[in-house]
Length: 280
Image (tube, rainbow, N blue to C red; front, side):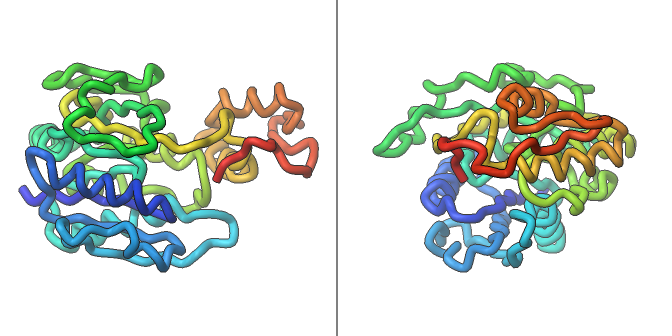
């Protein structure tokens, strides 16, 4: 089956280039590689000719990066190019040696499931990461399922779905209908997609073979720099599903005095800069 990898990007050109090197070094190199550039006219700085990238350009949105719309545009380009298996990989993620092959196997065997793979957050490495050493870093995120290579777990919680690394058959993508493009900026669209997939009769699974490794970059925890996106997208999620998502972040913002709950709605308590440590 023809396999595509889709990556959405705004900046992070060195991470994007390293990702392509990791894909070229894998046990199965994708036939199709789509890069969706979100308001990034310099995306060529992060492209390698080895994968013959197909670039889709999306304009800026005044509210934030159009993450949901970018994933949809990338998947549609991949399907229009003949892909039967679509893998979405965050621009910061390096592909483990068997990531593409692992997703292709589980998605072709279970074409009505959405598959996620374990992701390890890498430590800072100023000189870059050696692909042959990635296995030594393997320590998947503790808040998500992490089956061993060769193992699968089906019927996972939609609240744990994330778009850093996932793969599915074209049949599953069509059935899910893609990401809700009402979400703009950071937060909420992943959980929405997980619940939508489940509501439309798909299963959610975790597969141990397709492992990814998230390259280090500075950030804030909770993500103060995305507070307004999280509030806006959280309201959209509540209108669709009857509750607020991202509760851990909301609680952390509230403890910091940045937001408060008024009649079931989370709102800002102040308008100054949220944190001196905020990162883009």
